[in-house]
Image (cartoon, rainbow, N blue to C red):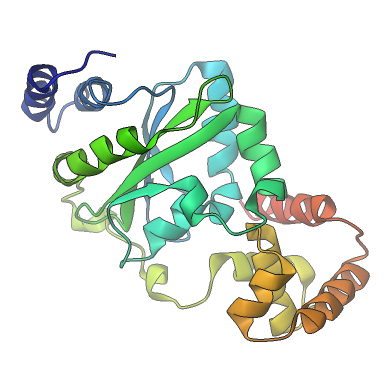
Length: 265
C-alpha cells in the first residue's frame, strides 16, 4: 500500500480532476488505497425500496454475479448498509459488524451473500447526492485477510468528510425526472410489503413485523427489546409463523422471501 501524505494528496487531486467523468471511481479507489488496504470496492445508488443501481465495482465478472447481480435482485433489502442508506439521520463511516443485528452472522442473508462471496469485513460511507436517496461507497476484505484494524478505521474516518463530498459531487443526478420515486415517502417497509404479498394475508401484522426482523438477523431477545414484548411471546409468534407457512427453518423462510422478490419483477 502506497502510504504518505504526499501520495494521498496526489491521488485525491487526480480524483478531483476527474469528477463527472467515467475515470472518477477508479481514481477514488486509488486514493483510498493510499490509506487502507482492501479487496472489493462497490458503489451502490439507492432510490428507496426500488432496485439499487451499481454505479461502480472493481470485481471480475464471475465473482460479480454473486457480489453484485445476486445482491441487486432483492436481498439488498436485508443489508445493514441499505438500512443505513434509508435512514436520513445516518452519516459518517459505517462498519458492518457495528450495524448488524445480534444474530446477523448466523442469518441466511449473511450465509448466502457474505459467506458465498468470501467477504470477511466491510466498511463504507453514505453519500447524499442530489436526486438519490443515498449512495453507499463500501470496501471489503476477504476471508484470507485480517479484519480492518482500529488505526485503519481511524484513517478512513478522518478522510471520510472529503471522500463524501467528492462522492456527492460526482454521483449527483441533476435531472429532476430521475429523482427519488414518490413511493420513498411511504412509511411502509419494503420488506413488510414483500412479506404481505408472499403470505397473502396468512400472517398478522405483528407476525409480519417479527418475520422481517428474523430475516434481518435479530434474535428472540433483540426482537423482544425492539418490539417491547416478552421473549416468550416472540417464541410463540415464531412457532405460529412456521406453522402457518409450513416451514421449519430460517433457510426455508429466506428461500420463500427471495422467490417472492424474483416473481415480483
